Length: 454
Image 1: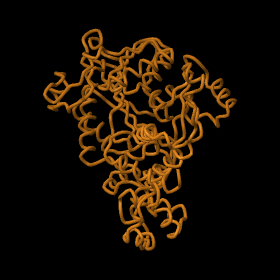
Image 2: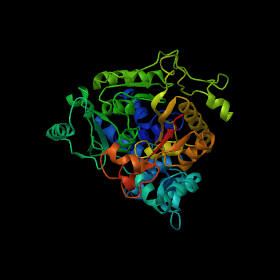
Image 3: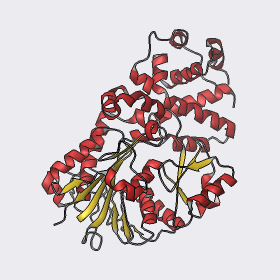
Image 4: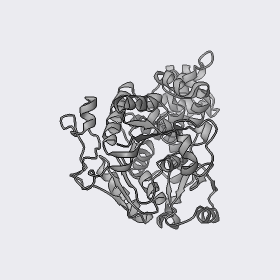
């Protein structure tokens, strides 16, 4: 492909991403599968430009005075140091390249905006989120949002049922991977951003490690799931935390994993077999079906709060023996805005809307209430999100405690030494909060709530 054709491909992908909920990396992969003429260098160049636009869209649209895909791609050329003449040559309309520049585009190229860009442009986040992000990050707002525009490292969790961290680290280095131990997680290994081929290694295929960000690994350890416990993973998704808990439980006890997405639970079954995990139980599909607004779960939480369950929610309405005894640990790894994962999925920051955020908060409240009724007296309910936003984190815990006087916060700093095996980090208090600039991880939040005995 010519340089101009690569630009046109990037423009077409960006246009298509506006009308799909698919993750950008998956969409790009499928786009190329239908276009076999693109070579490996073409694919890498086009994908890099698309992700450059997604990471720096706020600045590019400010610089060009437009949010259309052509303008954004032109903006990346300007950031790369291209001059107006070279840009016009690429946008000539010849062959498979983009159509010639319009008068407005030529004017934007030649006349940058006056003054400094506003804070939301510098930080690369939606302007409507500024107040909430400031509430979350305070004076660190720009540093954290700048870090969010970078590429994330690749973090691995060593599966201690099959291997030791030292052995996996040594083997990865021998295979040419640039790998180090993670800063905090005792089972984590960090590989340089952009590393590929990890899933093709014998280590991965034998179940010696799983891909999992360090913040998520820490959250899994803070659950403090011990051998012999009964654990409910209420919105398990792909099951990363279920697999991590199974390892800390030494494959002794029971983990019930449920999710509205049956396909993801099927993937969990495959992952569990590879990891040698035998204690994860998946409910039959008809048992784990979703509640709808016209089909409440009938649990006490609904009666107490007066909430109507939002549509398409996973619930743990299992027949005995799943629900009769209650669980020692209940994990609510709630659907959220994903603001903590913007380095990995930069498209999420532009897909989030106030309406979507409001719907997510309702879902989070419902899942917390549903999780509460499955937590045995003396047991713990763990709430986790990959969000930076207080409205999805601290506010949800405050609202939950107002509805459930039989629960209380267990300060994370008090269980950190036993769960993680180190002294608590400076400044750690009631909740675990992670973010890329401060902790070098994805953004994450974890709260531990304990149900009183009796």
